Length: 219
Image (cartoon, rainbow, N blue to C red; front, side, top):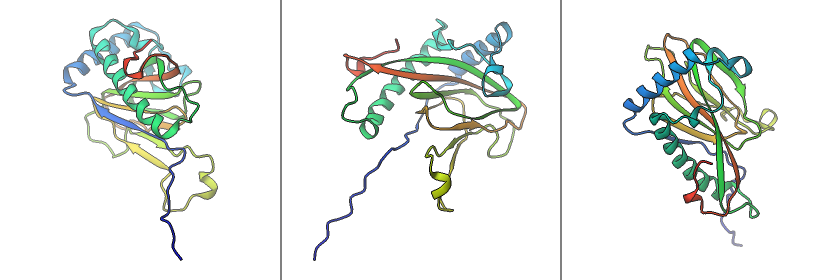
């Protein structure tokens, strides 16, 4: 009797993209100054969000013509297109459009000592992106200010083995950029030390397109 090898199918994967903006120091200085100016002169929208003990901008942050923001937006668009190609290979069905266009809603967040964000997901969108401009430099615990991703599978509570992990923690650093599906629950652990944790965040919404995705830009 002969047996064929076991075929393993990867179903319903959750992809998380991670990269860094090279030589980001000058860019981040300009971005941090711009964000702080927005905080001083603009409205704080944090009361409408998951942000606690912090500040959040309006939802058009990347629309500015400020040079550093335009540089960051170009970088982000490149990463979105890379992610979509890889995501499509493992997640999309045969009926999925072969190419997309996308737009993004974007905002800046400053968290200070004691600040955190409750566990949440992003609805009515497809991807979530986060770029880290600045993080506190003072010594802290390993989890202070971390982004924690939570297993999105609804049946995990009833079927999980005790050796499986339900959380994945990412320690942010300046220049880091992350992309992940909007259905992935996440939270920001409490910032335990003095300083500011500045991030630029975005929701990415897809729509069908007739042009190659490599030529697609923010609309």
